[in-house]
Amino acid sequence: MAIRPILHYPDKRLRTPGEPVEEFGAELQQLVEDMAETMYAAPGVGLAAPQIGVAQRVFIIDVATDDDEPSDLMVFVNPEILEKQGECLFDEGCLSFPGAREEIERAEWVKVRAQDQFGETFELEADGLLAIAVQHENDHLDGKLMIDRLGVLRRRLLHRTMTKRQPAA
Ligand code: NI
Image 1 (cartoon, helix red, strand yellow):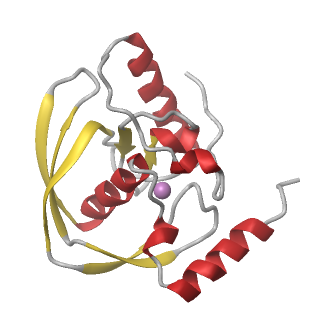
Image 2 (spheres, rainbow, N blue to C red):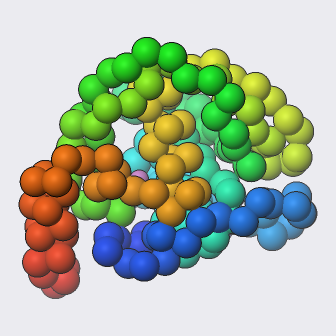
C-alpha cells in the first residue's frame, strides 16, 4: 500500500476524463488500496482516481466520519447516475482544493449503478452526505470540479485563492 500524492487545482490532469475500467485484476486492487490509504490519511470522505493522476472511472467514498463509527469503504467502478431527485445546497470540500469550502447545489437523492472492485454490478439509492459525495466524485470522472458549479464571482475568487497559494514549506 502507498499513499499517493493528491493533485491540486489547477493541475490539468484533474480535467482528464476517466476511461472505463475493463480489467478487474491486481492492478485495480492495488489502485483501490492506494486510494483508500490516501483518502484516510488526508483525511477525506471521498477520492476519485483522477485526483491521483489515474484517468480511470473509479472513486471511493467513506461517509463514516465520526471517530467511533466503523469505517465503511464503498468502491465505485464505472459508475452511472441513473436517477436524481430534489435539490439541496451543501457545504462541500474537495481534497484537490485544500482548505476551501463552497456551498454547491446538488440533487438531494440519487440512484447509482456501478461495479465493485471485483466487477460485480450493484445499484444504490442514496440521500444525505452519501448522495452529495456520489455526485461530487462522479464529476471528477468527467474532469469536472466543484469550482465549475459556482457562480462567476465565487469561481473567480476560488481560482485566485488556489493559484496564489504558496507551496507548503
Ligand atoms: Ni473532490
